Amino acid sequence: MAKLLFKKGSFKILCENVGGLYASGTNKLIKRAGTVSHQSRDRTQKSPKEFVRMLQSMGHMSVLEHSWYVFRIYGSLGIIAKLFLSNSLFCISTNANSFLISGNARMFLEGYKKTENRVLGQLLDFLHKRNPVLFPAPQDGFKKADIEFEYNPELKTKKEKLLHIAVTIEFNNHSRGFTHEDVRSRNGDGKVVAYTQESTRYVDYSKEEDGEKEMEFVLPYREISSNQIVDRSIIFLRSNHREYKFTIDEFTDLLEDWYKRLRGLGLKPEEARQWLPIGIKSQIVQTYNLNEWRHWLKIRAQKPAHLEIRTTAVELLKTFQKIFPNVFDDFKIGRKKNNTPYAAYIGKEELA
Image (cartoon, rainbow, N blue to C red; front, side, top):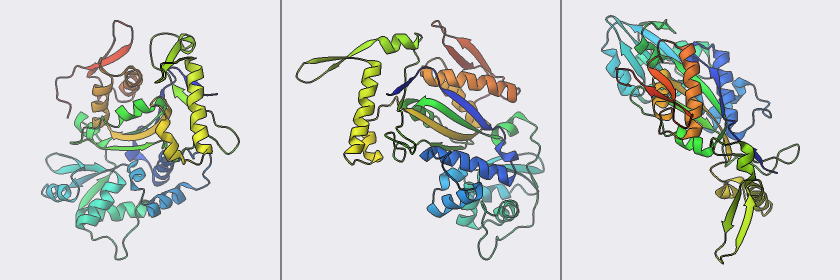
């Protein structure tokens, strides 16, 4: 029988400061994010290092984006232009005699590969020594510049924290509708995002190694009890005008049975998924810098937002306000007339 989930959506902060991780922690985070795609977290026997190497060999570089590195570079600010040319996604802020640059592993590696920028070369040589698995060196080594830099420096101002602190969060027991909206939230322009989502192409919802697998469906977040939803009957109309009456339990069981029968006929999961509803349970891991999380909260916690994602966004905002009190204090949490939560951005500065 299919399992119905009512208001079970949740989140877990996997890392509240990705840039502060040691090499082993970064590799573990990448592995944890990567196993979401195939739902293989409990099955894989690979070590974090082996998992990173597998991703590199297969060309699945997007999972390596669940990493973050921050440097303060001292000296000429003219270097900034060269860094922008190598990869315009780097997050950069300046002061009188130095500038901060941050980004994920893929940005640093591909930025150097495209330009052989010597500033990036020196930073990559440093990162290679810390984590040679994630940052393999070319045969002739990295071409380096003679610059003075500080790794993982203290971030003092609100702007520095927004741009240069990255947080990784795992969302669980949400619908595909949630994740479809979620991945459309990115704004760019000083905001960096990385996603790894449960794949309906590779996850087989008809079976698992130790027996039958139970399909999970996320019910609408209406302000009525789950029993009322489950007991409510719906009408399914066929083209010959004959009526068939089902409870939601019965109808979702039919969907589950239909999917399993398609798999039994030889259709692959990527083919049988064409009949999966948008309410199927999904899981997603994402890494944003705080600037992007602030934009995400502005969009997804506001009054008009979809209730499922709005409910979780407000809870996440409450957590962020505790962890980063001076960064997310420009949001106000309230309740609509129907008693559902929302949050409004009340700050005077623009959301960068």
